[in-house]
Image (cartoon, rainbow, N blue to C red; front, side):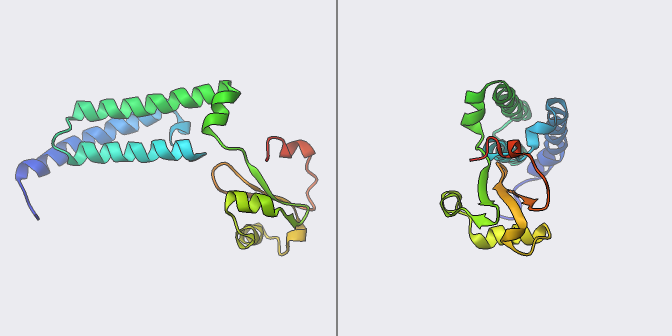
Amino acid sequence: MIFESWYGLLRILVVGPLAYAALVLLLRVSGKRTLAKLNAFDLIVTVALGSTLATVLLSKSVALVEGVTGLVVLVALQYMVAWLSVRSDWVGGLVKSEPTLLLHHGAFLPVALRAQRVTEAEVRSALRSSGIAVPAGAAAVILETDGSMSVIPRDVDFPPKLLDKVE
């Protein structure tokens, strides 16, 4: 079907900007953390917000107020879980993973690589991106909770405490 009705187009033109404005307002009020892709939970919330906005825009059976209520619920839940995870190690452990050490003093850690489904080639790529030509040039490579890799060069004097809470 290419065209159903002018009403459908008019609804999108009216509801779209209103739903978008409501989402932008909610995100501004709830703070930067709401859309930060720091872990799997944050990614799920981001996808759910996008899906809800799309549903409000395209589904005639979802009223604007219902859609905005859905957005409010998602943002409120995300805010509540983030608030609790900062204040409770148990909740934090439930929704966030710990960073993982993949390379230590130039040596790959095969058990950690397998557990995190990361190849040596991917670690070498992260090393190159950081300007390190060989694994021996790194003190550590850490897989962060957001999926990125942090590379600590060997010539940097870093305190051992930096690796606290790294598996």
